[in-house]
Image (tube, rainbow, N blue to C red; front, side):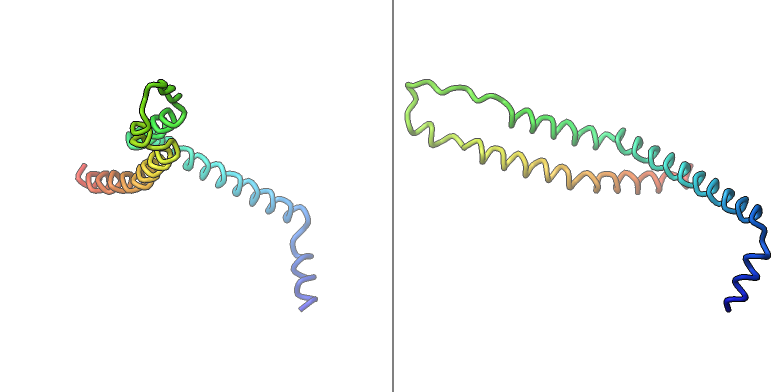
Length: 124
């Protein structure tokens, strides 16, 4: 077995081995660039989707609501009105739950659009 590998290595010259490895490296670099270009193209398509803009707008709205300054209640308010108001923590949790629901619905919207696009493609 050892002799087989020694003979095999001697059969190819060092120059031929180097050239083969260079071709292999160039091929792999080409494949990496092609896959990277494909990934960037898909990412740009998904970022330009209306559902992505809707999600970003919703998240921005929620962020704005969370960071909005609360008005200072006047001293003439009663304790009953304070009890009727929800705490900022409850508001934040409700908004986070809403954002999560929107985020979870986004892939479904992409799949639905993709299936509609695939159905239309053969007809065209």
